[in-house]
Each structure stands twice: as structure tokens, then as C-alpha cells.
Length: 174
Image (cartoon, rainbow, N blue to C red; front, side):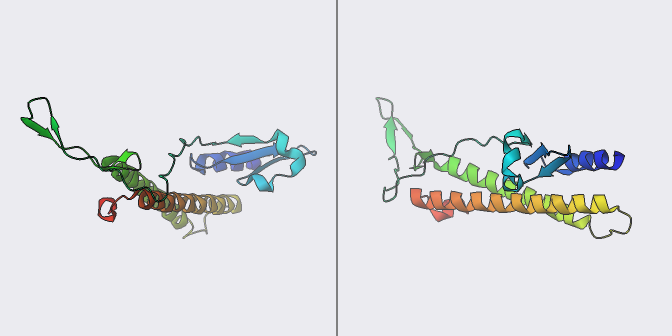
């Protein structure tokens, strides 16, 4: 029993904050864990508890296809016209700086997830001193982190598609 509790504690300590873990108790009183809600038997789904649930901010609506990017013209500021103020370019309802900041954040998030995955994989270089439970926990963590990397790559790909649809110049996103 102590090993089971220790294994569960180790699993939750090792799972990154962005991972979702589903747990339920079956008819025999066994507590089960999975990272995929599809692995939970249908009769237990109403009893599932979710750990590490992530609330993502709502995605901005992508720009309508075929709509040209809106680029504000340079204008005169003030009634006298003595001072000129350069307006910022807007693509798909967002300024160019917002596009660049979002790209920077997505790339940094992906690199961090890839770094975590590499570090976790390196823990398996010497398995001679670890227990089977620890080994299996690390394997599970690797699968979770691989999924996390794939999700982040998909977000980056979707961002690039949205930027392309909004007419953001490629050199702005390099």
C-alpha cells in the first residue's frame, strides 16, 4: 500500500502543471489514473475527477479569408500639423507588435516543453538504480511531455496560418 501511495505521489510531483490527469474509483475500490478521458470506462465517467485542468484563454477569431490587411496611414497629429505621428500597422485586428509578441511567447513555450522532454529522457540513461515503478512513472511522464510538445507545435502552426490569413508579412514573424 505504501508503494502505491508513494507511486501516486511521485506521479503527481513529476507531472507538469499543464497536464491533465483523470482519476476514478472502480467497483472494487481501486483508484485508477489516466491522461486520456477516452481510457475511462463509460460507466465511471460521471465520477471522474480531473487534476491539472488548464483553462486556456479564448482564441481570437481569425481574420476573414480574402480580406486585405488593414494598414493605417501615417497621419498628422494635432490641429497645427507640426507634429507627425506614425500609426502602427494592423493585421487582422491586431497590431504588428502583438503578432510578434504572441509568436515569441509560443516559440519560447515550445522550446521550454522540448527542454523538459529532453531532461526527462536523460533520466532514463541509467536505469540500473531505479525501481520499476520509478521507471514506469518516467515513461508515463515522457508520453505526457511528448503530447505537450505536439500540442505546442500545433498551436504554433495554427498561429502561422492565422497570421498568413491576416496578411502579416513573413519578415515580421521571423
